[in-house]
Image 1 (tube, rainbow, N blue to C red):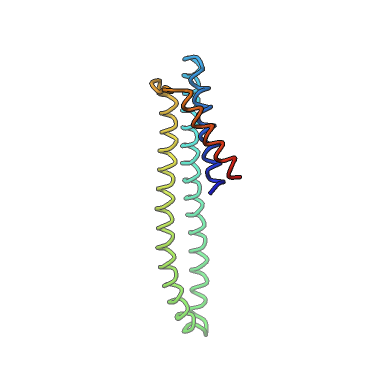
Image 2: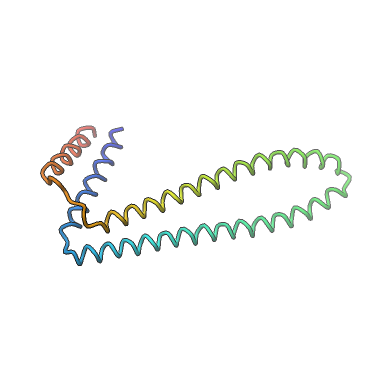
Length: 157
């Protein structure tokens, strides 16, 4: 728990320091930095999309090869002297595959939600850096609060 508070305090202090440094830049530099952040966000989004597409294509290629090999082996076993035992095993495996397919589909749905959340977080971050109306109300209170958080995390180590 103490480690979590330390990480939280570090993120908070780092975020506040980055925000203060950002606001101390000239308007031109703020705009430039906001544009760079937007560009990096777009590149990350594109990279994620390309990665997902590549993974889907690779999975399709593997599935096709597995299906071809399965058909070859299936034909041979159906014509062998073990065809009855093979049929029993095949039925059991079919039940297992049905259950596994359900789990794979659940995992695909969950990864899509994760991707959507990551995209939303990137968009939120881009928006935070591009808005000009954000201001620190009382720098002393913020600094004092951050110091207290840092002191709390140091004392729990």
